[in-house]
Image (cartoon, rainbow, N blue to C red):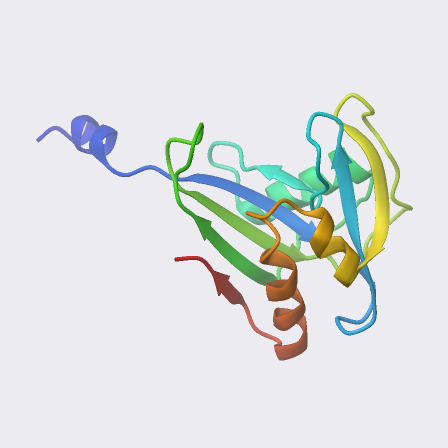
Length: 155
């Protein structure tokens, strides 16, 4: 089989990446969320990984685009979240969450057409603001921070 044909038939996966920015500790404090103007829920600052873009660079890029924060390339992976194909997403999604402990600047709305609000939200309240599919990421991130390891979420 020709390599191009083989690769065309190989399974595909979509990838997204996010930065976890928090104040205080994993037990007490708040996490940075953004409110997309085109969705009814909040999310961690992040988005789709571009073709051939390393996930940690995508997470840092999205943090800048969505919350106006500059961070070096994050090197601590907190959460890997696998989600199956569903509805309008024809392939599984793999989400990477990286720790962004040191950021430069204050969070702000940079592109009002994309993000309508940026806030630090207490951990427990933040989990309730995320869509059901994304909600397991926050407890996993808290666990990763407490235990000093990466946490896998998925089937």
